[in-house]
Length: 117
Image (cartoon, rainbow, N blue to C red; front, top):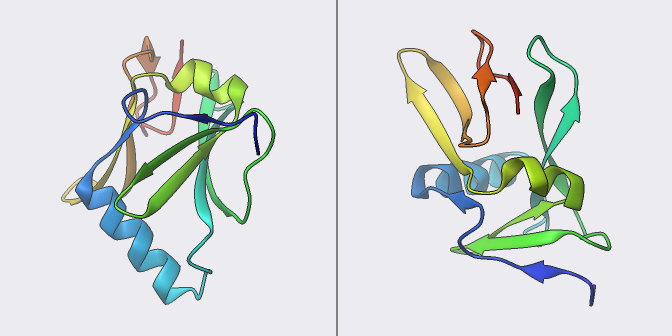
C-alpha cells in the first residue's frame, strides 16, 4: 500500500455519485471499507470501455481518490486515460447510471459506454 498515490483533483466524483455509491453499498451489504474500482479496458464500439466494481483493497500502483468517505481505486494504466475525469450519476430522462465526463475522450459511441482517446 506504500506505492499508492493519493490524488484529490485528478479524478473527481460528484456529490450525486457519492450518494449513489453509498446507496448501492448499503442495499447490497457491501462492506464499508470497500472502494469503487473504476477502470478502462479495450473493447466497445469506440475502442475502450469503462469498468466499475467494488474492491476490498487497493493494489500496488493504484491511485486512490476519496470524497466524503467514498474511495475510488484506479490502476495506473486506466489512470492515464481517466486523468481529469469526473464521475457523475444521472437519473434523468436519458437513463439512470454512472456517467464518465472524460476530457480525454476524443470520440464516444452513442451509448456513452465506450470511447476513443
